[in-house]
Image 1 (spheres, rainbow, N blue to C red):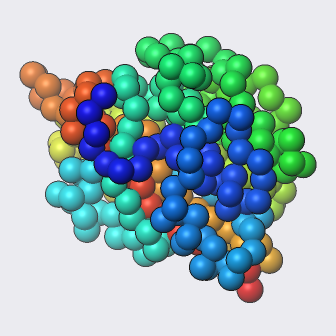
Image 2: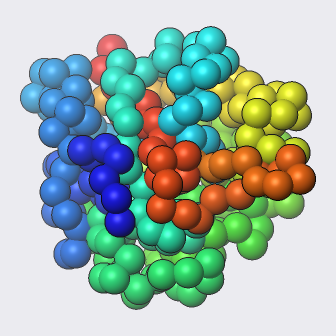
Length: 268
């Protein structure tokens, strides 16, 4: 696997564990110092007691570079933007398995586009072990909705991203969960049909940015008593193929280099 960025998406699990003050998943690699330091400065050394992870699928770093203005709603809610390395093969179940277990594919066991339930420890197991309540909000049949099943946590699975986002907003307002993971696959779906930079795909990207902004607004309104970390964190990138469609899964910069955005909202 080529190296495209210093930090890998596998650093997310250990970073969140450190920021929340819990023991990381057993096989997790090192945390991301920039992410951890951002939270420590924002919270004056306190540990975060709320996390919102927003996972839009397939947004490549070159998309951020070429269409930066479309990310303004994301940038306005975050203070750290980092180039991140994905994992191989750069397909959704492999990538999210690494993101939330902290382990590379050879260790967590998903090495192709398959969706078995992970048996290695994940950030969700680490949270449950520490008495925290995690929740996943996703579309039915997508990787996040399947590979993290069979854990003592809540899963909210819907037919489309609009329903996912409505439920995510409700959960933020209820303020019952310590970590909420929200998955939106609309950019990925559109990109596969129309190409990464087609007008339809850029509209999907705009929607992702707008939804993240709406979720962050609700976090600020409803989680005022908590130190909260938020993230806009894609799994892999994408590239144009013959026929004007899009794809991913290769060890090339378009698929492997992605942007992550992290923010921190200290309690009032």
